[in-house]
Image (cartoon, rainbow, N blue to C red; front, side, top):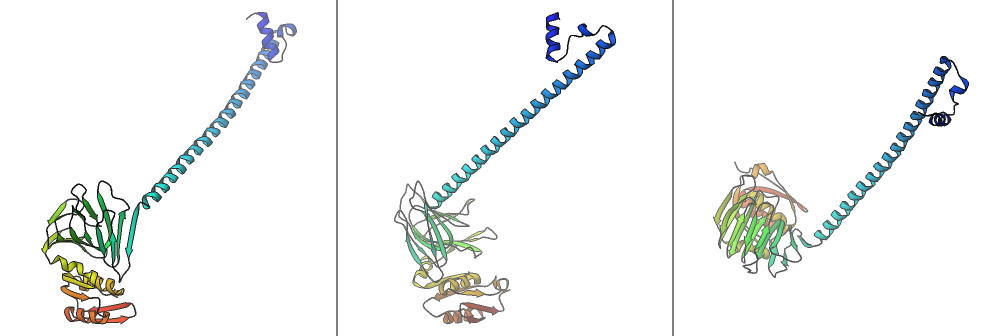
Length: 306
């Protein structure tokens, strides 16, 4: 190192050239230690300043990342909201109260008679498929024939596929069974996993929701559409189905021991144009029950079935 560079270093650290003031070795050693201390302090200050600067940069980066994540989440939420809103508004939902029935005309001209306490959802416009959703209840479908565009009824337990025909789907959530009955044409019925039956006129499939087993029966399918005129024909049904039919026809709530009556099966022909008392008298004659009516509530008691 030449004399010029040494003087510049001494000047940078605020000290004089030791050769000008110190002649012995001890003085020079003392000066060396002083220089080393100043260099160390200067480096520490520089490192601390760099660390503080790095912390400020990291903090700004974290804030920027948090803002970006918040923006992404907010955008996703807005997209989800609008997609849900517009998707919901692409459908028509029809809810029929207890004690009423209603005729619905679908976008392709097909019609559905909905029984009491039923809910149907369908798109405002059909696409490559004609799919409607019987979310709860019973409907009599009269489908316009179209070989190129199949018609599908989805319910909680069954899917019904047709090209053009008339049939009844019964799928009340409160019942342990669901059924499809064919009036005209041919339908294929699936339990969402596989096809369980192909039905022709006057055939019916009854699907047990508990055991997941179907049973195909011969029936007078047209009789299953007469609830639209106040006549409820229940052939060989469990007692829960007769109770539900009375509740829906008269808009009442019936309390009974479901476990006691769960194995009871009978045939009931109910006419909703009769009074509630007359209908309950008929059921009492067939099933051997006793009942009490209190405004819109009915209490049924009896021995049930083993």
